[in-house]
Image 1 (tube, rainbow, N blue to C red):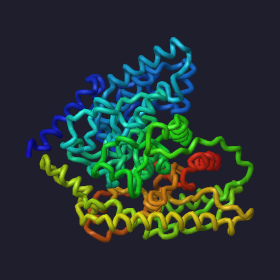
Image 2: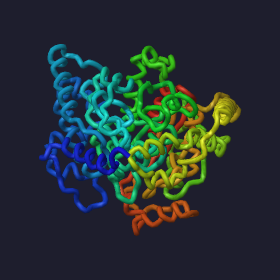
Image 3: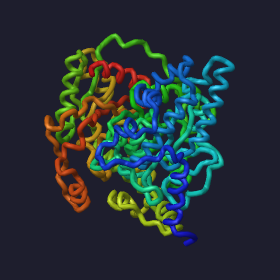
Image 4: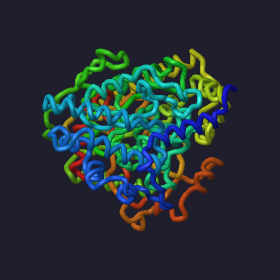
Length: 539
């Protein structure tokens, strides 16, 4: 053992703390909900509170591109709010405000000279998940073995976002293994949900979910191989989309598997966690319009289409699964609103649901967790509680024959899903297949921690490689008006979760926004956004 991981963790945490200006350091109040902290801590000016709190990214960019706000003042405001978010939630790994502010000055100089933005994201601060490499910055992904090793090259997605005018200024926290639904690692610790210490921030993009909920960033770039965009977005009451593989550039990201494994099997994809639907669309559309397939072999040739306005009701397949209150009632109310708005709803199944979950799990376990364990052993790191409780690693590794079998089954499940989707034409009024699927995002509200569990509504669409988005449809203003149910504990891990609930289970969810999920066929993100915009009008 070269060095104790605890010493490395202490040094990384000190480095992160030192990156926050002393005048931005605050005392965290002994309160459960910390979302009002930016307004009460005294660090942000009234104008900075407006910049960070009033707009979504699209609205903010309109101000910047009109010359009403400078990139520098916008970036400074979000640096301050991100600093508050970090102290409140532990959502960040790397802080480089100086680099972000310097880039903002450069963009302002270009705008002053040309009168034009450099691209559609000109002047927009963007947080990125720690697995996304930025030249000169660590991508530790919460491991001692990756700490104090600045990356030599930025990930393809970072290069593209910067070319579009985006400003990188922070990286967000991830769990050890990046294969669990609670963000905890030995280097930086656990991410706290800004709504409540009794609600998980989820994972593996828990840092991204927390900072976006806190509005320390309006765009949190994240990844998803088993719900890692959608579950944190859901758990933090915000919006997120998992595109299909090949849609967003994925070259040169840091991970927990041997090099190359990320390019086969169930594919991990990039996407944004955001505060609005149009922000998510802005990011995905803007990246696709750079034609990333020219430079990134992980991208497929699939230009962004210009869709005609839809002059008919949506045809929606509704997947109803086992849920718990208040998710059951909230989902039912949204479905009735959609029906009352004139859209056609038909009941469908998530076919092969259990098999899809098994297929995903078999791919996740293919290396037996050997790479993760070997990285831990280098500095004496233990597996975190979240990894141990998840039960994925360590395990018996699969063989090449197993891998081929998993791959064959995945394609057959995809083929069966396409056939089933086409056959919905036999149930609709005009004889055409459904446009989208609508389902609950999760069966219950987010709990204090979340094991991976058997959540087919999430895992299925990774195996099927279908675009899937989650967005809030109802806010719990008065918990007394709702019933709160959760799965009954069936094992020791579930019993431990039970012990972490608030005494009054409903109280932490006051003000919490509960989401639903929509899905469209592979690589039809533009159609998904179109349907999403229509559904927003229902709200």
